[in-house]
Amino acid sequence: MNILNELQTAQVEALYKKYGRTDLSRSEINDMVKSGEISNPSWLKNKKYLVSRGVYSLPIAGNDFSPSLTDVPLVPEEPKEPVVSQAAFVVSSLVGNIVPDKDPVFVPWGSFTDIKKIVSSKAFYPIFVTGLSGNGKTMNVSQACAATNRECIRVNITIETDEDDLLGGYRLQDGQTVWQNGPVIEAMERGALLLLDEIDLASNKIMCLQPILEGNGVFLKKINRFVKPSKGFNVIATANTKGQGSDDGKFIGTNILNEAFLERFPITIEQAYPTNKIETKILLNVMSDKGLTKDVDSEFAKSLVTWADIIRKTYYEGGVDELISTRRLVHIVEAFSIFKNKMKAIEMCTNRFDLDTKTSFLDLYTKIDAGEDVASWLNDDFVPEEESDDVEEGNVSY
Image 1 (cartoon, helix red, strand yellow):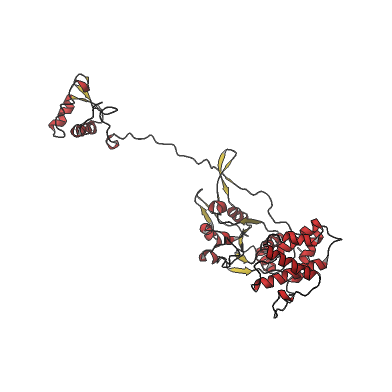
Image 2: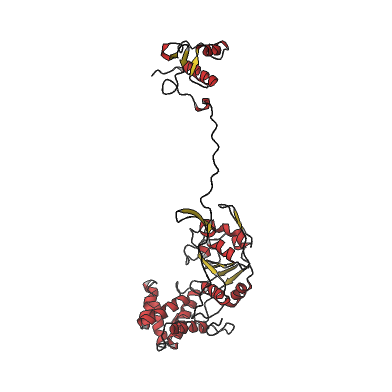
C-alpha cells in the first residue's frame, strides 16, 4: 500500500469532494486541472489506478487514503417510527383500606386533641411535630387517624430519600416497565394523611415537596403528568429536632433543613413526655393487654414512672446523658410479661446504655422500689411536677 504525500492527498480529496465517487474519467480529472482547482495529478493517470479504458480509481478505501467524514456525501436517513414508551400505564402500590388500627393501650395526652381536630377537619394544614425520642409523636398522629377513620400513609425518611422514593418512578413489573406512584402521590390522590417520620434525617433531596407543602399540585416530569391533591390530603412531619440539627450530638444523623422548607409548616407542636398519671395509665393498659390480669401491679407501674421521671429531670439539668422514654417503659412491661421478673426486665431493657449509666439506673430503681431516699439524684431545689388535669384520662374512647 502506497502512502500519499501531502500534495497527492490534497488532489484526491478535491476530486472526491467534487464528484462524490471514486471512479473518475480522464476528462473529469482534466476538467479540474483546467479550472485551476488542482494541479495535474499525473501520478494518478497510470496503469496502477486504471480500472477501465480512460477511467481511474481514487486510492481511498483501504488503500492509500481515507477521506475525512466531512467529505463523504450525507445520505438522508430513513424517517424513524416514533418511539412509544414501554411504561404504558401507572400502577398503585396500595390496595384496600389503609386506616391505622386503633391501639387498645393508647391513652390520649398532650397534643393529641389538637392533631385530631386538624385531621378530622380534612383541611390542608401541614404540621411539624418535634420532641424527644419515644414520647409518642408518631403514635398520636396514627391514633388521631384511627379515631377519625382517616387513611394514613407513613414514610420513614432517611438521608437517602429522594424524589424517586417520594413521588414515584419506573419499575419492572411482570416483564414490563411501568410507572409506580410514590407514597406522596398516593396520599394526594386518595386524600389521605401523609406522615413524614423523622423528617430531620432528610437531605435537600426532599425539596421536591415544596409545591406540595403549599397545597398545590405537582408536575411529574418523567411521565408528563400533573397531579392535584384530593380533598382531605394533608402532611404531618415528625422529628426529634426542630430542623436545626442536633448541637449536643444526641441525635446523630439529623440535618439542618432548608428554612424555606420549614416555613411551609404553619405550626410546630412541641411534644413532651406524658405526665406521671397518664404514663402510669399507659403501663397498666399494656399489662392488661398482655394478659397480666393477675400480675397487674399498680405499684410496679408507679415505680417505673417515678424512676423515669427522676432520670428525665436529671437529664434536663445535665446530670446524665441518657433518659428513659415512654417507649422504653412499655418495652420493660412487655419484657416483664415474658420473663415474669421485674429486675430482669429492667436490666435487659437498659443493656443498650453504657455500663456506668446502666448500673446507675438500676441502682436508682432498686432504691425507689425499696422506698429509700433518692434525694442524691435530685437538686436541693427540685420540686416534683404537678399533675395536670387538662388531658383526657382513661382509655381512649372513639
